[in-house]
Image (cartoon, rainbow, N blue to C red; front, side):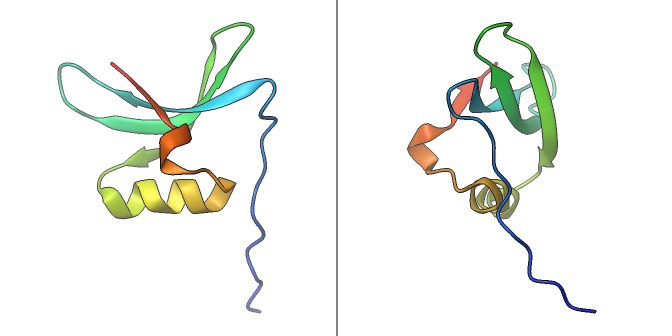
Length: 70
């Protein structure tokens, strides 16, 4: 009934964590950018600091590791 959430993983050699921010609306989306192709894979919408903290916790990412792109 109550499952313990396991930390999800990503390949750090192939992808980097990114928060994309819309210039027009300020909307923020967290995800991963493929280092070879530059393709962005969106994971979740960021509406507040709690959402960003949840994204970092889920994937074991330090705040300094996240790149912000506009």
